[in-house]
Image (cartoon, rainbow, N blue to C red; front, side, top):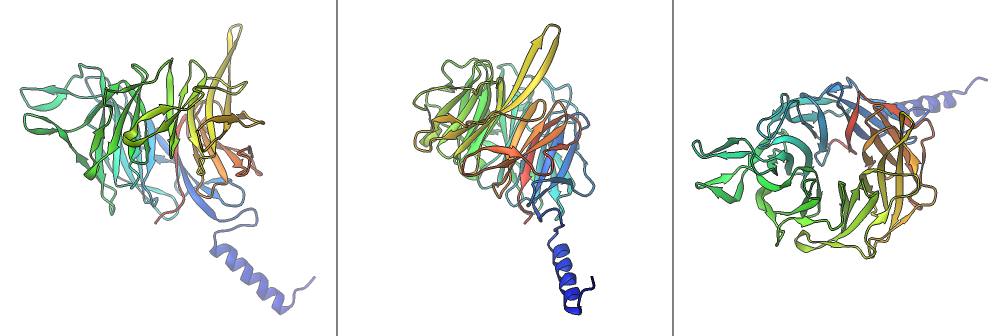
Length: 416
């Protein structure tokens, strides 16, 4: 069949629009960029997120070097122009930093590609986690061990002797993404500001939520609560010290949104809900701990969706039969009572994901969820039903290869 001149012009115009909008016949435009840390090869895999299908395709020049060793945490500055990758390094201990550790700063191109800028060291040892304040102006690095003080030099360069952890604060240059150390103006030693903020013993994760920064300390299953002050300062709000999570066996994660915080207890196989009050006070939600969904165990990470109506929990479940152990990884799901924070299981959960899930993100249009899987080095994509909270497989395949053992992942909806 031959097209008329008008028909040929219409087809040509449509093709031009398709190319101009970055669309194809199989999907829509790019709605987000996703970056996944690969621990095995010290790389960062970059992906474009397709609007129509949720499909992931590699960005130009992916994967990128993490510019260090053992990348464990990632943060994306609001606006999407800068990505921060925390490399834990190798051989770190309470008395020394590991090789190739530090915070690597990357600028983001309009196509989602990463360009390395510089690396910065936190003040403590064995870095664990990154968090941004709500304005995206300050970056906080959680270290398992705080530095020790050496009186002869008046410097914090000695071995840690108290077992406590530390947070290092940096201000972010909005133009270059480069970092500048923020010292602790409330704690002085010989007239000098302490270059870090001390937290509880053996911290491993923290959560920035509104005006609060909370760390989880594995030494005693406690929370160190801080409020964000002016100029990047942190103000400790524990009137009687760190908050001890009553009855906890092994706290394995912290997350939350708005007025509620959710902890997971991997040994008890429970989710522990709290309300978050003024001065970052924590109050148990009525009803207390919630049992994990049937078939799911060893919860390690949680995520509240953007509406705070649904809570998702990643699990590491291992079943041993005779001499063999098989991993079953599931994603539990709950509706959240927005009045009291209580949880109700979603009927068709838990959902299968890849082996050894670590972290989870939601795309900015609230259509898709993505899970990084450590054991098989993949990303699992899920379609989100905003009316029920249920998750389904993506229409064109839900498993995407990352790069080596995938740890955490970060996402930006735009590059401004």
